[in-house]
Length: 186
Image: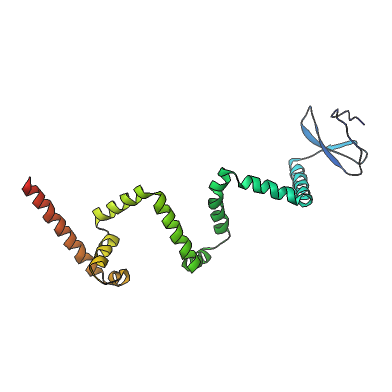
């Protein structure tokens, strides 16, 4: 049977059919006899497409798996996969759950691996950061200097801020002495 609206071959079935009128490019519905019934609204189109997609996915599970596997092997998917995974993970969690994970062993190991990976990929940023800390005599730089010279831990040193300030003053005076000696030699 040839349909006059679309000039394509159609078969009459017991189900309602969605088609497009070529000259208007509007979706329409046919009844069980194949006759034009009405034009669909955007919401109706979206709902019917979703239903059709769900039905197709249920009938073709193996094909869906093949398509997903193929799309996941693309480089652009792999590039954004970790970012998307983090977004999906954090969207469903509250701040308390995130903190709990970060303090767990699994979270600490993941954080450590991420830091090592970042350091490996960004050596110039690390050098820049270390030079900035060294120039400003920041607390972490001074603490590291104290740790190297003593048997104290960072936690013990942070408990006595006076110790940090004294070491900072010593480092400043050493730097001043070196600069004055260099000026005298010139």
